Image (tube, rainbow, N blue to C red; front, side, top):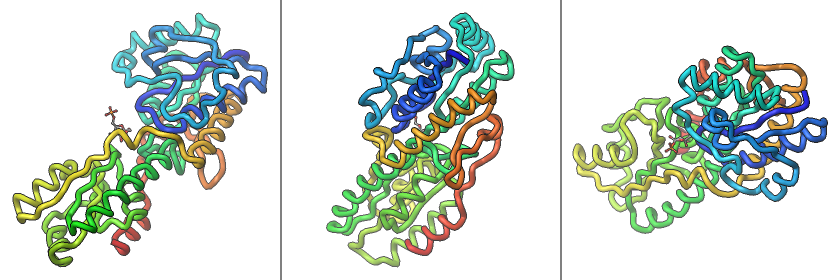
Length: 319
Ligand code: F6P
């Protein structure tokens, strides 16, 4: 292989730039040219290609977001647009494609491989950490540290005022972020999609603390009761419990990537290039128990990555 392409797709995650840097530098060291694709799969359809050189990756390792930009492409879900994307790749003489993103990205890469024989490698990049085939996804560590810092600040005022706070963190389908930051911040209660949120029980627990006591509930946005606003409304309407709501939202997705994310992104970038040059396709490169591991792309989204029971139990015991 002499020419490969790289894109970031779906929602961005801190550490994607460290990944881009690693792919370019590893490929160049192997005498391979990298073509950057702007705006994820949308850019693939429109042919937004440019030579991505080593100099473009100077000084980006500590930047949040992605210099390649990204998109949550609706068009790419349609076969005709995917065919156009494949044609653009072939016309540009590109022999393989690396894509960093979440489950939608893994699906898109799989379809390009299946329907158009494009050699594709996925790299897990999402703050949600919900991709099967890797212990951690790029961006997760930064997001939980950012959320923890915000919750620590809220805790100061919650404690001083003796208030109930319901704090919503991201994680559309999984409670990895909520559980980790809940444990790290000493939250009193965690509401996550993996377990049933029993509102009468939560009410009893808050009541047991007595009046004027701090009570921090961390809720994952994917919880079945809804988000922080809905849970606060239930507590007020059913039990007359006053609370304050904080939705941390997109601030969790920005900022300087943590050291752990920079190192993970660098390792996975290297692993992706080596895997592609080694002749593999239709796989994601992840890290499991400290080792690089490949998993077939369909498995990464068809199999559910379970939140470890021991973390849920620990959160319960310590709350
Ligand atoms: O998938 C990552 C994620 O940050 C989710 O946690 C969240 O639900 C979603 O992206 C939000 O996406 P958007 O940027 O479209 O609001």
